[in-house]
Amino acid sequence: MTADKPQEELASGILSGDFVPLSVPEFQKAYSTAIHVVAGALPPDPTFPTGTVLELEGFPTKTLRDTPQDRAAYAAGATFTEGAKQASFYWRSRVVMDVAADKRFRKCVDWEAGTIHAALLAAICTVRGNMKTTKKVLRAALAAEFERHLANGADETVPLLVPVAPPVVRH
Image (cartoon, rainbow, N blue to C red):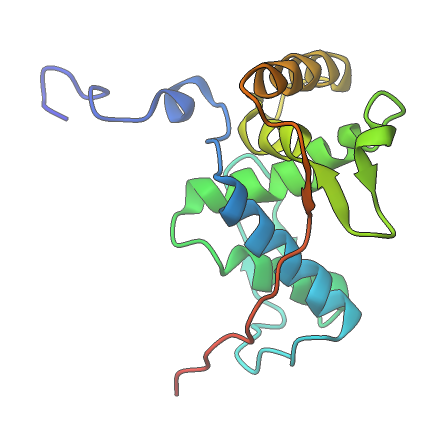
């Protein structure tokens, strides 16, 4: 980035307001962490900042409460070192996963077995969108991204959840 071209080195997603893509392992680790925290399979993080106000660009301000959902979101977000990826995960896990549960993709996810079609998981991680993307537009974009990953050979069922280790607490 230079004074002449201040936006030269910024990612196009940041400039356009789109959420950055995530790798499948990044998404699986964060999503698994959230699910394991809610299920009580991971010990509570003693550094959880109850009462802290979170301000992520593009999201409403939120005060953390000592609830399983807030602890899960906090733990999942902590798996990322970059704020852009953290925000992207929150959007993908809340908004995109909701669209992926629609009847169009219902046959691609087995919630009981904890498996998902590899092309759908890759599409969830890479579909373009932002806070202003409507469900209708997102549904079409997710379908197109799913088809693209299918055409690239992602044609198997994979685990949605992966094993995660408890966070290391540094004193």
